[in-house]
Length: 330
Image (cartoon, one colour):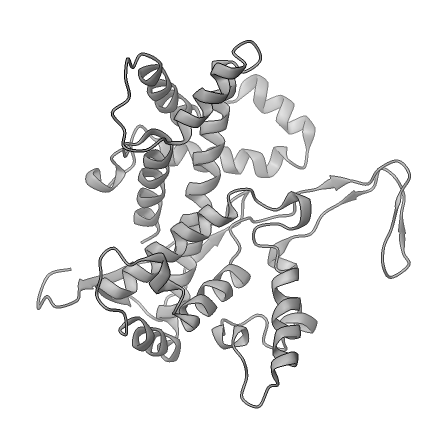
């Protein structure tokens, strides 16, 4: 399953950046080792992001990060620059980047446009795939959650593709997405920051001297039992819904605290710029999977394997999919 969520992620981001898919879904496999190359880069950044000497060593001896993606993206950039007239029905990311470049061609070079595109694709693909994986895995692991979600999604009118407006009327599905993001954030470690020279006073009175390296890992903070409850290590979408007998004011305060402290996309000034786009991709794909397919784990008793790196990867995640309304086939 995790391979196919990545195939989708690659093709979707290629469509948004270049108005054409890369061909992962059609081919059903990695293309030019792009996925393997991206996983290698993620591993590299997980080390180099904390130990600068390793970064310098890898820059000198190692393979450049995202090399396959960069080559494929540069090809698209050069093809676009050779266009005489666009036939695209709407602008894509590359059109917008080239518009910025035309306004300041001296400062905005081709390598900067390439960097913007590669960052767009690399960050989105892994985050979206990891979150869709988590939604499907945790739902299929819990028959009670699966049944409740299925009943809610079955109320949809059957439109295809499912509209964004229709998804807004699925409160339990939204709770499932929030819970999957909480329990399985895409990023696997803290993004460190250095305290300014004057130091930093924390709300509890503690003082951090200038130069102190600080960071918060969402895999830790998202399981804070004081905020998310005594069962914070468990997957329970109902924590995002109003409890039986819970007053409205109490509910809004509790939900507000959870939403303000969840760090799956970062927070504050450092919040992920692609958060809204990523959530749109995740929700559209996940709800479509549950609406169009009957799904079950190949081995419900088997747990997946999680590999912690810059972007958390999983393996051993196998799912049977059967299109609804079809008697045979997967």
